[in-house]
Length: 164
Image 1 (cartoon, rainbow, N blue to C red):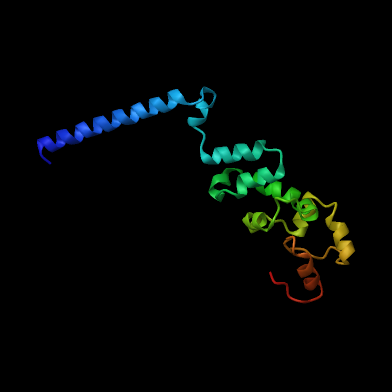
Image 2 (tube, rainbow, N blue to C red):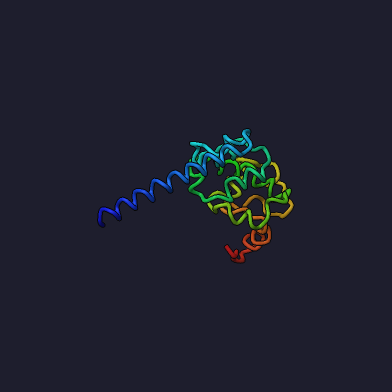
């Protein structure tokens, strides 16, 4: 590049930098001041996901805060999320909250879904009565508890192969 071309590039760079600075100043001076803090943060995406998970009270929002994001966004709190799923899975299966639909269930990693033995450790009040009602006597060890798994559990107990 020649001298005049370099001068033109530098001039263009200075002009564009000035226009960008003027645009940013105009934007910031015209926005609602109470929202100014929302444009600047040192919080990472993963930290924001962890904060939302830890502070939200409603389970559906809490689950959406992590399971609607990439697992890399919540790898720091993976154990907390797993504990959240394990301690509530049985109740979610029983109560079927609106947010706990097939789409949300499909976002939960398989290794976070407790086996019956694990679910009993975390929350045993309903599983034993379901076992008794189904006549299974609590023999479904190692079987993953999915909402649609009562029929496969019965097939498994009767010697038929389960689809899983």
